[in-house]
Image (tube, rainbow, N blue to C red; front, side, top):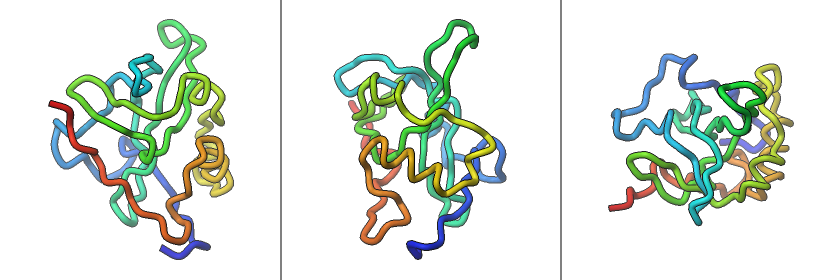
Length: 141
């Protein structure tokens, strides 16, 4: 992918694409720091339709019964493990809570993606030498 061409990303729920199999669909699963601290749940996946790759998890966290809930993105690069009920990630609770908040009006803005990658200190997927981490990572047994 050319570094100057950042594709438009879409929620998988609003696209014509689907996850290959139900056991690989992480939507609705808990999200936790790799040490076990629960951070929220996966509300949706943000995909690059051009390459058919998941780029971000849309994580819903905070609030009570949907009131005061915040939504932020976590790059798939941060996923360390996936189990039947949880997606484990590297970022801490503080990093996730301090991430740029999800705004539907901004998801088509390349600068927004840059803010998210900079926040988590991961190289952006459109940068030179980027290697897709694979999705999903091996499942824990």
